[in-house]
Image 1 (cartoon, helix red, strand yellow):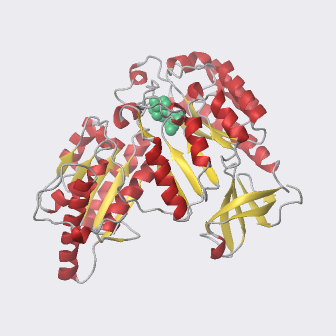
Image 2: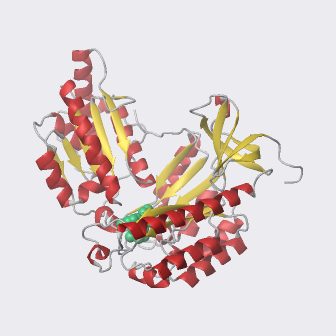
Image 3: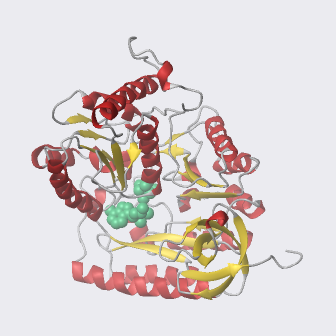
Amino acid sequence: MYQGIDLNNINLHLEPPTEEPARQYYFMAKCQQWVQAFEQEHSRRPTFFTQTFGCQMNARDSEKLSGILETVGYEEAGSEEADFVIYNTCTVRENANNKVWGRLGYLNGSKKRNPHKKIALCGCMMQEPEVIEKIKKSYPFVDLVFGTHNIYKFAELLAASYGQQGMLIDIWEGTDKIVEDLPAERKYFFKSGINIMFGCNNFCSYCIVPYVRGRERSRRPEDILHEIECLANDGVVEVMLLGQNVNSYGKNLKEPITFAQLLKKIEKIEGIERIRFMTSHPKDLSDELIEAMGNSKKICRHLHLPLQSGSSRVLKEMNRQYGKEQYLALVEKLRLAVPDIALTTDIIVGFPGETEEDFMETMDVVQKVRFDSAFTFIYSKRTGTPAAAMEGQVPESVVKDRFQRLLKEVQEIAAQKAKALTGKVEPVLVEEVNGQDNTLVTGRLSGNFVVHLPGTSDMVGKILPVKLKECKGFYFYGEAAEFPQGS
Ligand code: 5AD
Ligand code: SF4
C-alpha cells in the first residue's frame, strides 16, 4: 500500500491506464505478480542493490528506484550479489564514467554465478549516445538501460524487462513531464532530499549537465509543499531542496514564484526544523533570498556557492555570467546579512587556457573569502561541450601542480575556520551511530560541519545542543551540553 493505493486492487486484466502515475501503479502491480511467482518458486524474495554515483539529485532518484522495488516486494541486499543490481550513473567528469565501466566488469562475473541476476543502468551517463554504443558492443550482459528523462517509468520498464530476452534500452532525448506521487524509500527517517526542479539552462561551457538532464523544469509549489507536509508528518525534521540552480526556481511556472517565496512557505510547515538547499548559482542569488536567509530560524547557516574560477577572464570563457569582483561583493553582502554563515564552493583547475595568473586569481579569491570547505576538481573534457573544443588545454603536470597548491590552501583555511568554532555550544542533528565506534553518534551543525560525540541510537533524528570540544581539521569531537542561558 502506498498513499492509499493497494496494488492488489489493480485489475491486471484491463489495459494499462494512459495517465500517470496510475499507469506506473498498474505496472508495479505487474511486477508484484512476478515477484510473488519468484518467491513461490525459490522460497525467498528476490533481492536488489542500488549503487549511486554522483550528486544528491542522483541519490534522490535512487531512493525513488528503491521505493518502487520495495513496494513491489523486492528485499534490499547489502551487496552487488543481489538478484537485481541497478547503477544510477554520473557523467559530470570522466572518472565518474570510468568507475562504472570498472564495476560492470565485476558484475559480469557475478551474473555468471547467479542465473536470475538482472543488471540495469540508468542516470546521466546513459544520455550519451556513445555510452549506449559501448554498452551494446562491450557489455551485452546488461538487461535494462534507461536515462534521466524516463526514470518515472521505471516500473513499466522493469515489467517489460521480465518478458524480454536480451537488452532493453529506452532513452529519451528530453521531456517536460514531471510525474508526482510515486513511492520513494528514504535512507534516513528524519531527513530527506526533495527535488524542486529538474534540468539546467545555464550551459556553463565545461558542463555536460544541461545535455543529459535537459532544460529547467520547476515543480509546482503546491506539490512540493504537499510532499514536505507528508514528510513532516512522517517524522522528517530536515529537508534538502534539490536542483541544479535553485535560485532560478519558479521562473517558468504558469504562476511564477521566486525561490525565496517558496522557502518562506516551507518555513511555515510545522515539524520541519532545518531547511537546506543546493545548488545556488552566484548569478541568480537574489537580495530577496539573502534577506530570507537572514530572517529565517529554519534555513541552515550554510550556502554552497560554486566559484569555479577566480579569474574574470576564465569565468567569461566558462559562461558563468559573473566576474571575480561580483562574486566577492556577493560574499560580502551575504556575510553582512547572515554573519555566521558557512560558505562552501566548487572550484575547477585547469580549464582550457588557464594561465598561472588566472590560477593566482582563484587562489586570491580563496584567500579573501576563506571558504569553510571547497570541492576542488581537475577539469575534465566532456565531449559535446564548448570547452572540449577550446584551444590551450593545460598540460597534466601543470594542472596537477596547481591542484595540489589549491588543495593545500583550501584545507588549511577550512581547518582554521573549524578551529574557530571550538568551545562553542551548537545545535546538532544526530544522524547515525558512528560506523567505526558504536559508543559515538555522528551529527551535523547547521553550517554542515560533522561532529562525533558519545551517545546512543535513541539520539538519532534529534536536534541536540552539543559542545564542540576538539577540532580535528574537518570534523569535531563534542559532548552533549545545554544551551547557555538566554541564547
Ligand atoms: N570538469 C571538472 N569539473 C566539473 N564540474 C562540472 N563539470 C566539470 C568538468 N567538465 C564540477 C563543477 C560543478 C561540480 C558539480 O562539478 O565544479 O559545480
Ligand atoms: Fe553545469 Fe553550470 Fe548548470 Fe551547474 S549551472 S549544472 S555547472 S551548466
